[in-house]
Length: 170
Image 1 (cartoon, rainbow, N blue to C red):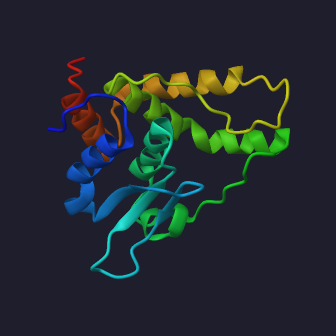
Image 2 (image 1 turned 135 degrees about the horizontal axis):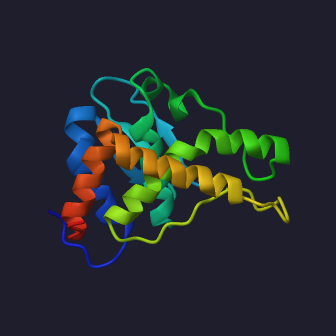
């Protein structure tokens, strides 16, 4: 068990690595300008979820993507997905949100497990006056579905590790 004093990335890193390093040959690390999932180049290396070093919530979010990525996706850098950075138009934003519902729902569940505040992110500062209400509702609905039907295996394992580490008995 990791002793928690504050929400810092080193604690989150320790929890993730203790939970998944051996069974999934995957570690959480920090220092990227932009988050990235890097596949191990050979069997003696680890796959890496590389996060920014300054955002606890961002790390939870990147972990949520890893938790829902299937076996084949986890064999591809960045899970084989495209990322269209901040500056998306409305059409691109709607497509982006379609793929963000499940990861953000899992991130919300992770946040709750470690008593960390959660905020839905549209990850696009350039859309002024954009109404994200529908997206927020879809994320909330997905949270309800996960609570009703269960989380993916790795997400469930991580929730339990977070609850244990942060003393959340709920």
